Amino acid sequence: RRKAGARSGGVTLPIARSIAELYESRPGVTAGRLGAYLLTATYQSICMTAAMFFTGQASNPMAAQIASSSQDPVKQFSVFAENRLGRLHDLTALLKANNVHIMAITVLDTTDSAIVRVIVDDPGLARELMINNDFPFVECDVLAVEISDESQLAGVLATLFEAELNLDYIYSFIKRPDGRGALAINVEHPEEGATALSRRGYRVLTQGEISR
Image 1 (cartoon, one colour):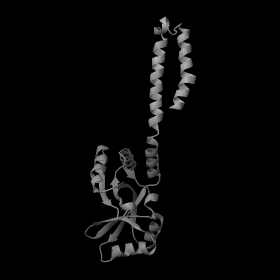
Image 2 (image 1 turned 180 degrees about the vertical axis):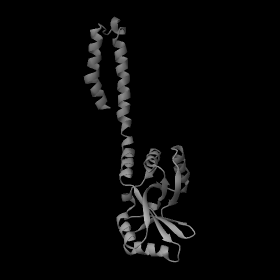
Image 3 (image 1 turned 45 degrees about the horizontal axis):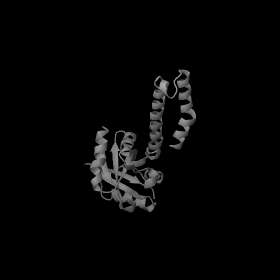
Image 4 (image 1 turned 45 degrees about the vertical axis):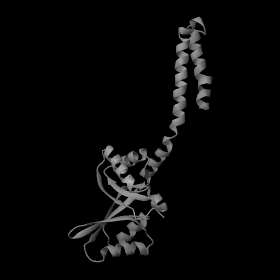
């Protein structure tokens, strides 16, 4: 506010005064020619500028969150495992033996095989382990949205609906710090989804934030 006031007093008002005097409009009888209008317009612009500077900073944390989530998105592996006894155990045991922690997991079962969707705290090491141990997989970015409890699920889904984003699937994290939950969401445009959710006040997690 002080900056806006100093800028107006040191720059805007002298200019307005000079223009008014150029048209021989001064305080008193001739004020109505131009000076009164210029001062009123200047006063209104000061109020608007001060409000913009005062409230403009509110968007900075949200912008920072959106930027960080797009630069460090949460990675999901979709692992293709033949439908036989113990194959899921083999995968989880492999990760555990190498200190890779599973943060979220869901399994889609089909007749001949299963798709194990998993989010881990060390995607680089998990990728190397699966390649070296014959676990075929694909990977993609997903939204990881922190929620306080199940009551926020409807709000998260409503936000994505209002943004006209198709949701392919959703599942929950196993555990989050401080007892807070989180959802893993696959949408058609993750960056747009992150922006929409952040604007509504939801925290979109990055890969770094879910890593131990």
